[in-house]
Image (cartoon, helix red, strand yellow):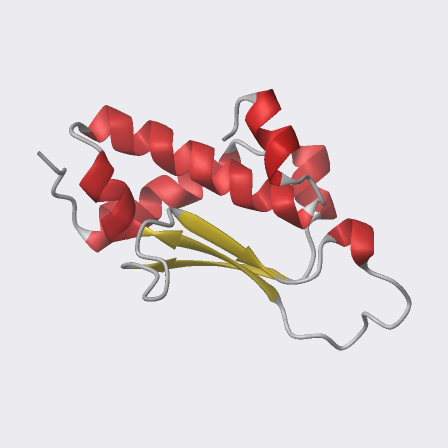
Length: 116
């Protein structure tokens, strides 16, 4: 049975997951906005999505770009979890996974590292 959780509590969990990022890495994050949305309309099974130009692909032409986005999909995560503890874990994994894309880490590497 899916977990019921209000939007404020879910956003709090996203903030806590961001706090798990080591300070040295967090300091390197620039021009990124983290959003929470109910669900991805085009791919409703997505838990999260990074949209932007990875740090490893930025060059001298990057300046003046709109912020990259990391979107965490609340309803999708809640639908696959049956306890609040599972939600906490899944939010943390999803946030770290999407932030890793910002640093240029691809899906295969993330899965090998256990952040799949």
